[in-house]
Image (cartoon, rainbow, N blue to C red; front, side):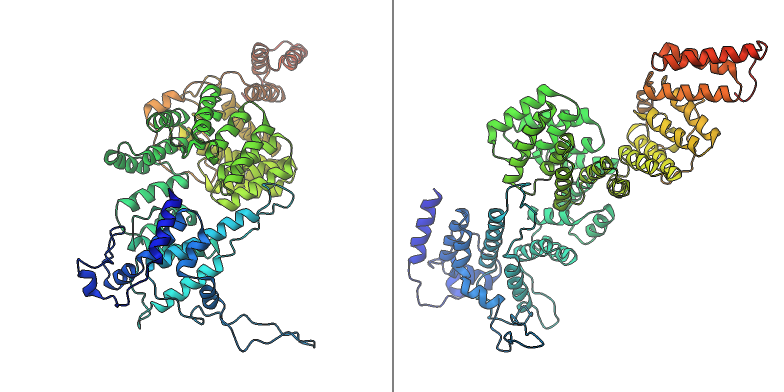
Length: 637
């Protein structure tokens, strides 16, 4: 059908234009042959005249654009000779190269955007279509020139060669639109959007954000422009500043929710805002996906899995964001559901990046890491900006002990999106495997800065500091890990941090061990006792975590049900057994033989440190007998 459309447009464009000039009276004439029945008429009379005059050419350019013949599309209104004269005008003052002391450099002309030939007088709509086609042509050639993903020549340095051309043409056009007061005349928003997108590609982010904000003021329904702004926002503070400059409408409301989720936010205000939108659009697949991601970021994997399952039942042919769903199923070790999801994605479209990521996750769950890498590379062949594929491929290379490839994968993920804390964390892990702890610490801190309420990030920082011999700083980081995970579990008061965190005994043991290495026996003993107390859950007289760690300070937001859910003990673990053994030896050092004997007997029942516990019991009996059989405690309890 596109070929038929293109041929019809070519024939329409081949019809000679009438010699009668077009004016406003002709446009208002119902008998005029220029009134377009295809595109809505522009409210700006000057633009409407231009659009009506070039309707035949526009339909031809649009048909070529739909057929992905981008160079032909751009040439309808902006031939290559015209673009060359605008971008690189001839300069008569150019100095040729010569043989002498000072080698002359031939100049390419003035750097001013309006120094070349004037831009043809065409409508904004046609100019946008032509320049956007030129931009997409450059993107297409960039992908064609790129080497095989992660191949020996794949340096990730391929650039869009049309960015300079499009940027200079737009700069010249906006310069020509300035009035005497240096204010721009109102546009339609599309050229502003394209200019902002090109500037963002050129890493001119502040100026790009200015033009994107201007675009959404002129045309707020262009969601692509909102997405470009999201890619430029890296912190919550940046989002707050940008929101004050945006128009207040329902689209900006959606933008705030979406960008907050991209920044891994999951507070109550965000959930309330999302519920308000779902009341208006209850079956919106986009908002349902945001709701699922909200639970995912809050570490509520069960709720996130249920939300994605419901979304999949409503829209079984929609593949957007299913790579996140596959990550959830992978973490939950739900092999049947992940296999079913991979089957669905393969049947809908096996050549979508999301489908390849889902299938790659399935093979990874089966420990077929080479096969998983193959599918992640296939996803990147289809879309080199697929963030999930870069990060997950880095994980697979770590499993395959290919640290060089893992580091490169994570670096490419960071290049795509600097907000991806998983890639920063993966870089830290990889450098830690290489025992390059200074590098690992830097990357761990980046990950912790992006996700400050994730205890896993701070635990990695603390462990790395411990290996570097910086025990005091490591203790602060690990206490921050206790506080961070309490934010998800039982509220965020620092005193309750040790009470509700799953995996808490390992962190408490690590803190106690570092206190022990610093010679602070009282602090070490307190944390060892807290570690042992996690076997049966927190009690009313449990020891509070000391307030010598940075952060915290927020009030306790947990409800009673959350506290009851966190009251279940961990049971006997390797960490609690090591803590009990340390306490038993500490009791021996302080000649508290009764406590030492009791702890040693408990260790024999645990079945973890049995041989050492039996040896300790014999030592206790020997000392008690040598002391005259006195079983009373002597020393600190």
